Length: 116
Image (cartoon, rainbow, N blue to C red):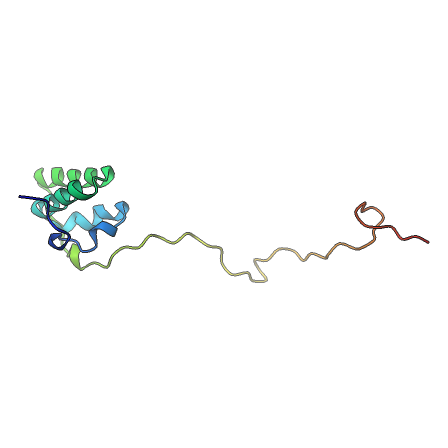
C-alpha cells in the first residue's frame, strides 16, 4: 500500500496545521488514523517534530489510551497566533508632554547665535 493522498487524511488541511496544535488535534483519532497521518508525513514532509508527535500518540494508544471525544476533522483550521501589539494610546498610557527645543539657544552649538 502506498502513501495516502491528501483527500484520505482524517484531518482536513493537515499540511497547514502548526506543529504546536497537532497534538491536540490527533487526540480524537484512533491508531489507524494516526498511522495514516504518519504514513502521509513520511511520504511528503518528514518533519521530525511532527513525526515525533505522531509516534508518541501511537505509543500512548498502544499503551491503552483511548481517543478523546470530538471530531478532529470538524475543527476549524488553526491559524498562527498574531504577535502581541500595544494597546491604544490614551491619556492614561501616553508619555509626558514634550515641548520642541527652543531655537537659537546659546547652549545649543548647532543653532546659530544671534548677532547684535
